[in-house]
Length: 136
Length: 353
Image 1 (cartoon, helix red, strand yellow):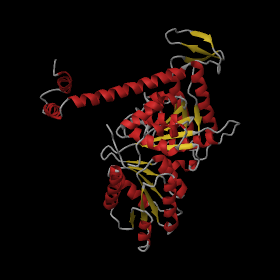
Image 2 (cartoon, rainbow over the protein chains, first blue to last red; image 1 turned 90 degrees about the horizontal axis):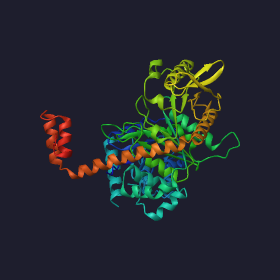
Image 3 (cartoon, rainbow over the protein chains, first blue to last red; image 1 turned 120 degrees about the vertical axis):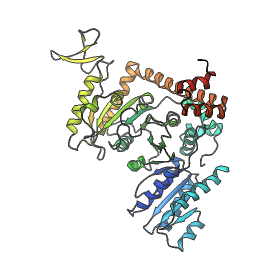
């Protein structure tokens, strides 16, 4: 019997060392029945794209608190596309200034979540975007 | 789902080592799709080339770190050997309540990032209890077909009874760490018995000697046939039913006997890893020289065949019986009108006994 699970890579690109938020999100996704691949701190965009490829994930969650999101996120998107994984949904969490969120969304990010975001919303958004992908 | 449909023409990229094609095939295999099954069937003749190395042991003994170091070593061997391509399958437990999982083994394997000669795949156990997932054997076959020469299979943190790895791997490494229990733990049946190589990791911690001593004591009890005695300075082999020493044997030269070595490692800095890699190579050579390699292949494929048969028979039976009658019998069982055995008899044979 086909047993289909949503697989999500949760990664922390860049140099800030605070992974509490990433872990809270990882835990919430786990509790909603998803399989979460957690890769730990200080990942380069190259490491993240390579892990996303090997793990054949449906979505990638990036947690960034360093302010480097406008450099890191486009690079991850670019690498995913170059690897033939342009269909993978990318979610960004952390400290993202209000004016940057639309720019990230415009570049192809599926969701941006700041402090105070509800994990239920993140779970719902990932599930919805991956369900759309499954129908295709 | 990220995985696209696999067609026959897309199997060649897997044989050629295309990483995305391999990753997508693995997803199909994991999800038990018909496409995944067909692809594996076609790729099956290309499998059986890799040396499958199982790494098991209690949670927190350093399995992931050790796998990382081993893979690192095989990519950059200190001796004159050529680097070999390494596949890694790391299994972590699924939640019994939600079915979700956090797969965290990659955290310890970051040194391997960016090396195209390494392919790491995390798997959730998805309800299996033996330390692996049901689809692990299939996933390993896919990686084997893609030409990875060594495949390291890391089990769920395993305590005592999670011994499925022994029927999948050619070489099983059991990793222990100091302070994990007294010597009665070491003589219990189960996980220690399946070890081809025993590792005391975190050997810089206090208690490493005691752990090694307990394991050594266990080994002397766990390998009664054939047994080794030191007698007049010579190693001799005694079969218990014979009672008398058989012909003297060479301490290192007897090809038919494998006594699991006990090695100390410190996975965080790589101490002892070259020695471990050498022991793995020795074990592979031993298996090939004694014919045990073929015997293990046979056992392995038989256990895979049996579990697939079981699964298929249950599925076929499920299709033949109506949900209502199943739930009716379950209800009777809950009300203690019938016993579990009686319920099985009714559901399978219409209650002939």
